[in-house]
Amino acid sequence: MSEIHETIEKAQEGEHSQFFNRRIALLIAVLALFLSFSETLGKSAQTEAIAANVESSDLWAFFQAKSTRLTQLNTAAEEMLVSAQTISDPAVKDAAQRQIEAWKKTAARYDSEPSTREGRKELAERAKEAEDKRDLALAKYHHYELSSAAFQVGIVLASAAVITGAVALAWLGGALGIIGLVLMALGLFAPHAVHLIAVL
Image (cartoon, rainbow, N blue to C red; front, side, top):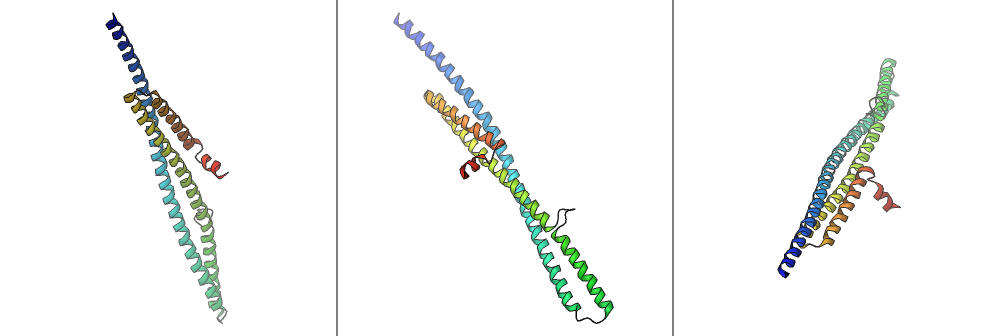
């Protein structure tokens, strides 16, 4: 009779163990799913940050080139203005004055050209916009990286729970999954929120 009782207890333990393992397997699957989302979002944010950084760098280089040309034109105009004072021939003096005006007009266009957004002022604005895009993408990327780490550790702990049978490891893995979800949501909807809280 005791053998039958032991067999029934072992069968019940096996059913409980299978139920426990199935639930842990489901937890691992859910954590892996969210890990894939986090990794994909992180790679996208990283690519966006790199592209925005390159754009910003290119725009600042263009800004520097415009600044150099602007300085050269202003210097040439000033030099010709000084030289024009010594010219006695009215036709030559008039030609020099027209050239000075043309250079000043071109210099003004180099400084600000709203129609093409390629003047120095507009280039600086565009470069700062690209820097803002880069900073936003990097903030997202950092959240996604932390989220991925939380999901990965959660998967490891849940896997260890299957091997050891320790329910606490499964709960801890689930808690890390929730932390990973919160970090991923922050990356999606409020990537600068944690930084703002830290500043305050």
